[in-house]
Every structure is written in C-alpha cells, then in structure tokens.
Image (tube, rainbow, N blue to C red; front, side, top):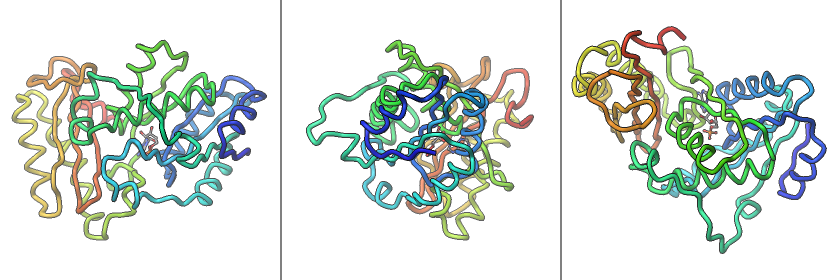
Amino acid sequence: MKVVATKTGLRQEMEHSSRPVVLVPTMGALHDGHLALVRRAREIAGPEGTVAVSIFVNPIQFDRAADLESYPTPLEADLAACRAAGVDVVFTPEAGEMYDGDRSVTVTESLLSSRLCGATRPGHFDGVCTVVLKLFLLTGCDAAVFGEKDFQQLAVIRRMVRDLDVPVEIVGFPTIRENDGLAMSSRNVRLSPEQRQDAPRIRRALLSAAENFRQTGQEILETARGEIEKSPMTRIDYLELVDAETLQPVDEIKKPAVLATAVFYGDVRLIDNVTIFPNRELKALAR
Ligand code: AMP
C-alpha cells in the first residue's frame, strides 16, 4: 500500500496505477461504514484495478471551528485499517497542500444544497464539491463510492458530475449501523456514555414515523419529532421530509421520499435518514 501526502506524489502514483481506479473519499477516523465502502470499491475495481482512499479533514466544509478542531484524526490506526482492507493507495494531504492561501475558485451546487444540511451549515456543500472535484482530478478515478448516510451529499455530487460532465461514475452505498441501529459515524466517539445510549432513538424515530407512510408529511414529521424530543439530551437541527430526487419538501408520499434529520447531542451533530416508498413501507427495513 502506497501512502502519499503530496499532490505531485499522488499524480505520479496514479500514472502507473492499473484501471479502473475507484476512489473512496473520507475524513478519516475510519469505521466499519468506511470499510464497507472500501470493499464495494474493490468489487468495482476487481483484483487488478486500483482502490484509492483519501483521508483529509477538509477545513472548508466545516461551519463550526470547534467541530473541525475536535474532529478525530487517528492516522496510524486508519492506515492500518486501509492496509488490512487491501487498499492500494492512500492520500493523506495537509490542508496547506490542498489549498493555496489565496485560493479563489469554489464549486457551488445551488439547488439541492440549499436545504437540510446546506441550510443549517452555510457553505458546507461548496466545501464538499470543491474538495471532491479536486480529488477526482488528482486521482483521475473512474468511479467513486459514497455513503447514503450523507444522502444529500450523494445527491449534490451526482448533480455536480452531471452538470460539469465529470467522467466519474458515482456509486452509492447503504448506511452501516451499530447493533442498536445508530448509524456509524466518526463523531460517535465524542458522545458521552449517556448520549451514546440514547442516540439510537434517532433511527427509531425515523423508522416509526416512516411506518405511517399513508399519513400526511406533517403527521410523519410530528411522530419523528415527538420521539426525538422525548429525550432531554437532544436538540433537533432539522427534520424534513423531502422528495428523494429533488430534495424539495413533500406532504404526501407519492414518489420515494426521504425523512432526514440532524440532531445535536451537546455539540455533537449526528445525521440519519430513511427512504419511504409509496407502496412498499420501507426499503430500509428490508436491509
Ligand atoms: P466521512 O469520513 O464522514 O466524510 O465519510 C466518508 C464517506 O463514508 C462518505 O461517503 C460517507 O457517506 C460514508 N459513510 C460515513 N458513515 C457511513 C456509514 N455509517 N455507512 C456507510 N457509509 C458511511
């Protein structure tokens, strides 16, 4: 496994990497969710292709300095996990390597980014699009794998690739969860034991609300809100029911819709979502 921290080093490495090249962009603190994406990347790349992982805590996608500063960075453990998972190339740049001090170009998706995480984290998706496009250009990857946990991110990146004719296939992957249903996240380690014990309520709330798929959007949202707010430890950042494609709010499940939330436990912000289908109760339940 090659580990490179410079853009020049990465380009040189990718020049003689065999195709297809499949990239898994991450911010590190790797857990089984990330590693499932890596396994999917290997399936796509095949034994002869190249699996690349980037580990970069991208400062320009953080809206809160404290969140950036407290983001876990266990690089040695991450490299060991990549090695064990059969990754070929890991890119671990510093912020100064990725961005010039006077950088003045940003990639903006202006429709799907405006709601949900984009509304409560201003500039977040500009940061995501900018870094992901740079990573695509630097690696020259043929495909890239992203988690459905960040379903808005996946939609925004698909749109960026479509609208800018970026020749990269975008592959989505279902959310990997702890045994109690909590979506795996690098931020889970920052929860107190009490918060960690309470946090599966997010998933429970989304599932119980989604079971009432014949109800109005308003009713679905009320059920979910009630369950999340039962705990004094939670603060809802947003809770929305949106069309799975357009990400616009809906009040009736006529097409696949996504019930999505971001919930604060103290200063730790967790996100999760469930897709609701008009005829089948829950795709997520079948998983
Ligand atoms: P992050 O390191 O949080 O930026 O995540 C890197 C990639 O891993 C993104 O595509 C995420 O959507 C994906 N990811 C994070 N958590 C999970 C999870 N629990 N299951 C599946 N994919 C995940």
